[in-house]
Structure formats: structure tokens, C-alpha cells
Length: 400
Image (cartoon, rainbow, N blue to C red; front, side, top):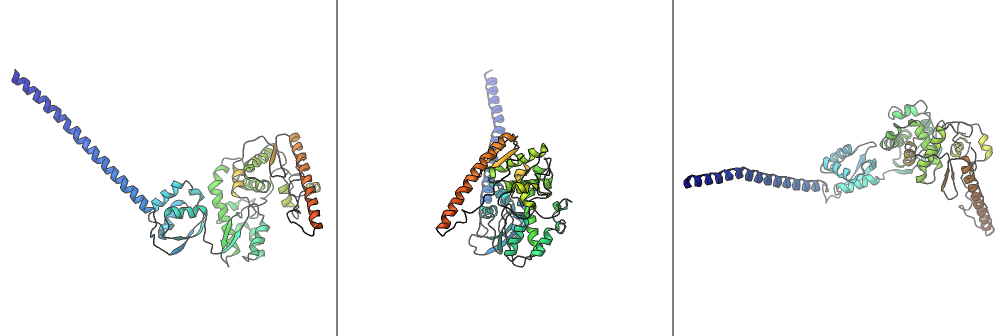
């Protein structure tokens, strides 16, 4: 009996050992796998860091690389790899995604070198530090077509008559820029995107306008189009509204609120009564709109006509376009821009009338003070341009 018992004990031990062996093997295998994964991860990180570094840190040669309008990150990576400015396309794309600013990359010509890391190149593209190899032209936000043409002609970048003819012939650009095929669009007003450009001497008038239209198209598709598809108003109406906001707003934070005011008025079939729009239809811009101007027959006189004006009244910037496509949700129907640039909003005409009277009182006091100051300086034989500047605030904001 004792012999059998010993055998049974031995068999049990052998059975336990047999069971342990697979577990030990699996445990060892897992350790090996974790080690291999760790090594692969380490190798991957080392390669990632290495591929993010300069192609040649000792290089002293620079090269101008052209990033076209509308190019996405993968396309930009391909361009840079073809120019031997980066080591790996996928790593560059990952580096860009890490910044969270892929949409901020700007087109243009950039002076780059192989001694620049991916981060340095990306930073330059995001800041828009383009290579200045031409005549610099800055189109301010809210510029109208005549101002843009005057600026281009002053820079000796083309012939006025050619610019005007192209401006009045959108069909010259509609094959490339399909948004211009809208039958309502009869000029390029509103589409000559406000930005800083560099044009080489001898660039044709058409190529100059084409560059501005490309910048408009790129920014619209990137930041505006998705919102417009959800809205009641279409592409052209949105740009018209954006141009009004551009001319009416003083502070950025007011843009979406001003948009809500005008959209609310349209929804209630109220006239927009915008001085900025009225000014566009006058023979020449005035320091302030007078009551006599409210009777001028013009498609841009929204004191006598309902709805939006027939065209944009300026070239809106990105913030105004965003505001027009994504207005604030308010019940406001009126606003007054005070002499300090701060807006007063109201839901009723009674509130608005009170705000307008306060504005007129402050404006008149300021103008009187300026006149007295100008008179004093004139007596001393000096003058100040800023003292003589006329207020451009609305003089008709209390009308309904």
C-alpha cells in the first residue's frame, strides 16, 4: 500500500510539472513578444525622430519651393520629398497633424534648405513666410474693386483698362473657377481676396486676378463652404452678406452678431438700411450719409429696396465670411456703432432710437471738440490730419 501511495504522489507531482511547462513556455513567449514590441517601438520612435530631422544639417544651399493653392498635406509632402527637403513623406504628414494646424498652411513660394527640420519647415508654412521674390502688394480687407485696381496700377503691375475689362468679364476665369458660373455674377467684386501678394514684374493682369481668385477659392472651400451648405442662403448671397459685414464691423467679435441682425431683418422682410451698402451706390464715398442720400434711386439703396444688394460691396476677409456663414443666434434687429467703436444692439425700435440719440449726442460733441482743437492749432500755424478726420459713423441709424 505504501508503494502505491508513493507512486500516486510521484505521478501527481509529474502531472503538475507537466501542466506548468506550457504555462512557463507561454509566459516566456509573452516576455519575448513584449521585448520585441518594445524594441520595435523604440526603433520606430528613433526612426520617427530621425526622419523628422534635417536632410542635411550641414547644408548651406537654399531652394525656392512653390506650394500651390489648394494643396493638401500629402501633396505638400510629395512636393517637399521631390525637392529633397524632407526624409519621409508619412513622417512629415504626421508632424503636421501633431501641430493641429494643417488648415493654416498657406500657399506660396518658400525659401527652404536641407538644414531645416520638419518642424522648422512646417512653422514657416503655417506662418506664411513666403519668399519675397516679387513686388509686394497688400490688399486690405474691405477694399473695393477700384481701390484694388488703383493699387495694382500704382505698383506698375499692369494696365488699368485691362484690369477693368477683366474685372467686368468673370467668364474669363470661370473655366478654372467654377463658382463664377453663377449667372448673377457679372463682375469680380467680392472675389479679389484681401491678402499680401508678391508678383514678378511682367506678370499679366489676368494672372494677377487669377491668383487672387485662387486665394478666395482656397479659403472659401477650407472654412466656409461646409457651413453654407447647411444654410438658407446660397454661395453668392453669403459673399454679399460677408462684404456688408466687412464694411459695417469695427471689432471682430461683432461680426457674427451683425450678421445675425441683418439675417433677422431679412427673415422679417425688413429693409436692411445699411449705410455701407448705400455708400457703394453713390457716385463718391462721403464722410457720413445724409438724409438726402436716403432718397437716391439706386439698387444699393436698401432704405427703399428690400433684400440684399445685387452684388458684394467689397472684398470680405475670412472672419467676415465665417460670420456670414455662421452667424450668432440673437433676436436683435438693430445696432448702432458708437464713437468708441463699441456696438449697441437692440430688439425693438424704441431701444434703438434711444441708442441712436446717444450716439448722435456723443458724435456731435466729439466733432465740436475736434473743430475747436483744429481752430486752435490753425491759429498757431500748425494743423493735424487726425484732428480734421471726419467721422464715418452712420448719421441715419435711427431710421426704421
